Length: 87
Image (tube, rainbow, N blue to C red):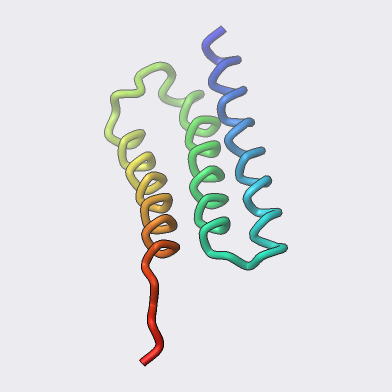
């Protein structure tokens, strides 16, 4: 049952990444691109690492990938909110 839930969460993360990628293609806003990359990375993390590691989600590799994912989201939000004024 756990494998099904992990697969569903991974698949839904990839679907969310596709959703943000669609918006990036129409607006070319970096916020949507970073969100798409973050969701793709999170989905790939869940789908690829579960068969080899299983339910041991306290390993450092999980946290490293999540750190990169949340870092992408943080960079996206900060770059969107920092106003660059022309000189």
